[in-house]
Length: 304
Ligand SMILES: [Fe+2]
Image (cartoon, rainbow, N blue to C red; front, side):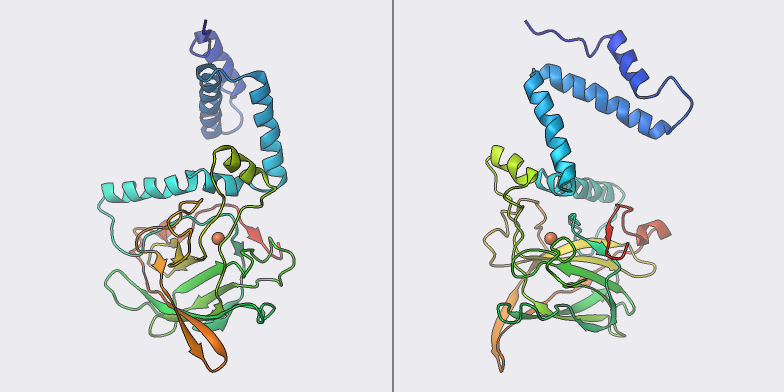
């Protein structure tokens, strides 16, 4: 016999009380959200007949997830971050907003405050010179009319040859493989870096633990993250995912999208193998000053 009580007026009232509906303090918005979370949690417990053991295992899992700082990784791996992109795409389509480089997930590994360079910079600290393939990454940032945008900010970050990121991997130097490049008069940016490797979730971490139980891997193709911004234009959060990577279309975080695949061309230079990647970006017009800004997501700051 299935017993359900979540829908009863007494329990509904109880959750409203727990969500602070009975007082005038606090945040009405958060109260509404918490009430919904409580209602939906209760419904889920009843509908799926969640056992006490399962419930407390989940509570312990959340503790461990937060303790390892992997909540941002899990929401990417479960596709919720990609869902936010799909939802924004649909909202854009509903009001006829279209064009430009597609958006895709930011992921949890951005660090604010990277060094700023005009037009051209080197991104790697040379520590992997003996194992890495040098990469020249360049392109043009354009506006909606196709005209190059001078003075746009290309804020980019990527992993090293082991698939790890500076700051989160304390063995790397500060801001290694993280830079902000201001486009030149022709809208160009140019970065001298190294070819990144794909990212893999920590095999011992709680995100991978969950993915294991879903029968899924926790691997991403090699990729490069970007924030592109320019006055009067809509902020763009996106990534280039590298063609030829075995996980290109099997990305555990679902970030690879049509229009965001970068073709790396390898050639033999005087100093050995060199990779070249050309990628142009196109921004939409900003409909308001808020659209020029990236989301208010809390992010790491190296010197914070
Ligand atoms: Fe990444």
